Length: 274
Image (cartoon, rainbow, N blue to C red):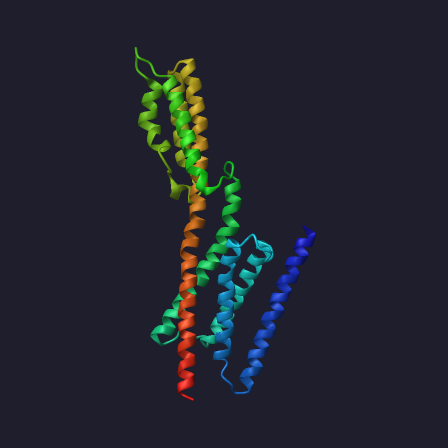
């Protein structure tokens, strides 16, 4: 743990030194009355390509390209550095041209979505550990089916033919929809348990009116309610991360296309203007 902290501090110091050197070089370059826009643009494009390479690193995890933790740290550092280069490149003002303004908006969306993703990656894993056993997102439907089948088995075992079926009626009126699929996604994102308390309270209110065997079945159903709600919680928070990736990654590639087109256009204009 101490060694990892030392390594992290070394990386932070190295990043700060790199930023300081970059600013110094651009400042000295500007003293020669040379335009720094081209140099900052090329360096910014290299940073963007490096940031996009992080996604390929995750897909090529079998190659010895460094640990995912180190890549993530450099992804964050280079992303922060790219914001500084971006501001220097545009001269700390909003561009006027249509292509430049579209590139400006795209970069802002990519950077802000990256910051949002960093915050989510800090918050959501801890929240996932607080509710139930962490499961793989793609396997959640399997667990849904197992919980639903367990509840339906409990209901079928307590069916009666000679009088009112209290357990079955309660399941049909109050629980069938809950166990049929994902529920309460927004409430889980907001960390609310109100719906869960309402269901367990309804179960508790039914217990005094049931026979001993039915009471035991309802208690087991209450356990399944908690399991199902924990699965909903896991699914809701993991969906947030997957939705974020669905937004951030396409925006990144859109930014790369705009940046490459912008670079080609500038180089072509520079060559024709002599």
